[in-house]
Image (cartoon, one colour):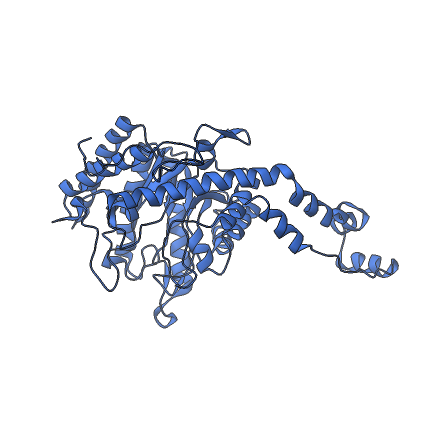
Length: 438
């Protein structure tokens, strides 16, 4: 690789909790074994192309502030080539094993179907070479079906079947590219699969078209022999007023309706969970309970802002609770932690990109240790087991017995003259227990 953009940044290494080096890992000792696995194998870190290398530092009130070399001039194949070189230099200096991308993140701008496919093919050739040179791997690929004006009314839910067909072209090509690059997953984020007003929306048609699209994706996955996981990323709103993949529970209902509950899992984003009115650990626990836990986009929102700010996660308590749920779910199989986070608009130095990611990796490694210790202690498991213990007794078994009915359960309650009393949920005790491990 020829990139020298990060030449002033030394490769990031583990130096331990006592280190005074701000660009060293204090907790991310990747080869340390925790709960039977190396920390790197637990966390499966990835850096995303879009926030880290594509976003120029702009917002709705002002132009970009970053001035990266690959942002200058036309969005052509040469600029895309330079961006890819810089990205893999970054991944290598940071020493993360994976990366993630949208098609348009890694290719030159296209103005036709033929140009889109040609530019993507050139990018995939280069990505394959860079993977071979650096040993980095692809956690997941995805198609950007939301940025271009053609997707103003949605992609798979567009009122225009030509947009649907264009979307099929993009997804097919990126799914095949993900397969070729050895990707572990393929993600669909329905950024504009929703509506802004019901006045112009045929809900049933859009949901049925979306369900058919996802079935076509799954069919193609099997046709080409891709063994990775198909993931949907829930989000309640923004950019649309309402999105059909509102949260994990909504996604599961959608998958059940279209016969996909055994084919598709969820990629949960922390900031999207809070936008839906849930906690991050709730969404993980729900995905585990429904059998569709897949992967994580790790970031956070700002409690004073009501939109998706995509900041690096820095809350040890919140992340310990989330990590506890991930470990209880059995950990990742094909998934991992993708840093879907960006430095702030005023953080213009190349070193800021490293500070954001180093802090994020360290927080996750530190909270992995906390969550593993909490599970080893066993206090929460013991309390929950005791709280539900009566379900293993006669009363619980009668309710689930073959042939039991509402009438038989009711009659048994009357015959036993039951008069149940409330039992303490001991929330404060459990919160104090968790805090001992944070």
